[in-house]
Image 1 (cartoon, one colour):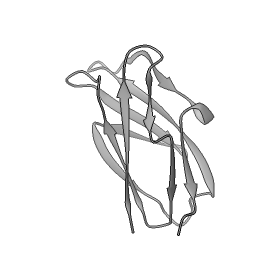
Image 2 (cartoon, helix red, strand yellow):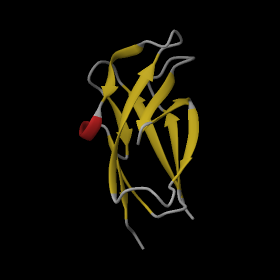
Image 3 (cartoon, helix red, strand yellow):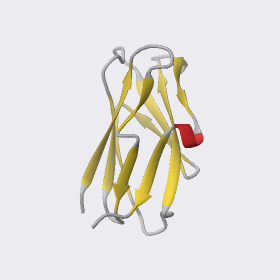
Image 4 (cartoon, rainbow, N blue to C red):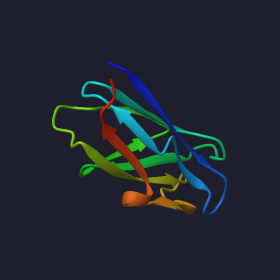
Length: 103
């Protein structure tokens, strides 16, 4: 089992996204989503993946047996009131991607 970090940095409108954009995983691995540079105080992430919504500044999801071979996720950066920061919403294929594979 491996842990993969995905950092979401915000440089202003249009300058938001995951690094790395694509994560190659195996079943049983974990993916840790972390608020990165440019976020303000109480900013949080909202990740929508496979019908579930995950929120926080730093959280982990597990790659379960029912993960598809390739899936995308939406990512947003929210201010302390729960509003999306300007230009900090990436939906569907333009967001991040998780791919089953690797050694």
